[in-house]
Length: 510
Image (cartoon, rainbow, N blue to C red):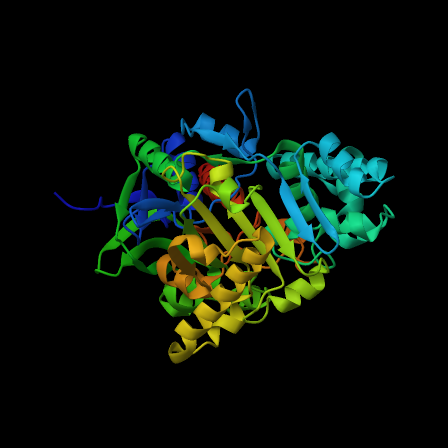
């Protein structure tokens, strides 16, 4: 019996959340789908690892767009519709801001959030609440327009707030509310989840993020992000999807401008009507298309016109005491020497020490995530990729440990305890680690930078023009919805929808 079929409707390259979402949606519509994953497990970054006999969450700190049973948001509803049953736990807060002159824990819910900022900055409640309601209006518009595109006139009539703010940065819109700087600082920490300073980050992106996290809160899976990816893979296979692991795709086969299959590293040529690829277009257009002559000049103009966003540097600490014994009181701490996001972004271009860190104690959302009497703490900075590309092999270990040491010392000072004195395990993840284990282009986990020069609204309008090769679709952090676990699901669904729309159009023409 042959390992692969003679032909598939769709081949999906990559079994992370985006690829699995594509596979689920296509299989649900009756298509024959093959998923090829280079790793021996599904999930990509949505995974876990084991150290000292303890399973440790690799990346997922908060999942957006889930909602509660009976009131699901778009990602949670999609998973429910596909029969992917995840045991979601509520994250107990939005974040603790440890920023110059302020120490405060803020919680989800527009009313509560606005009141908590007002307690620090008296007289700001009405303004903050109005700003949050504006974010919610934009959030609702984005969700509707992503499903039901409409003309500019229709958008203006039905989505006035979205249209009026679409051409402005987050800073420009926030400034119109005339808030004191301290209140603006308290509204700013979540910029890190999209990776651009408020001066150049489109308000559309920031508004969506704030409405989702502050309006509805966030979740984590009880059994780590691997619960999510494994259940998605299991459900996909139950729906007839063929998933093959340890299958590294080297080439995407193209003829006369149309993708028709792939070649794996071991030499298998597999054919399909469509290919969905999670690899960055940078990698695809420079080394994966065969023959290379099928890559038009336009492809390089598209990828060269975009900037890569952020990578990650994380120190994982498995500690020998429970969180409360170590002075760890908050699930998510943003620790900053400045809240000038332009300065933070500039600082992230280097090798540290970094002036903006986030620390996550998963035990405070998921008490059973480590053995009794222990705690897992992750400390993360999100540097740009360019500086780490310049680190030589000879210097890599030294630089890695110097950066990690500075990050641990900074958070030790915050908690008032020497964290290394309590460390059972210390694991360091750098941009190089990410590039090695996931093949993400240059270790970039955040896709292409969202800024006012490359706006999400413009990307939506030019999406059809950027389809370089017929029957080849892209999914992953580098696509329109951007980075993060929730957007990965959305990007995968979008790629699948593009395939389904293309099939429908070809049937109409026939």
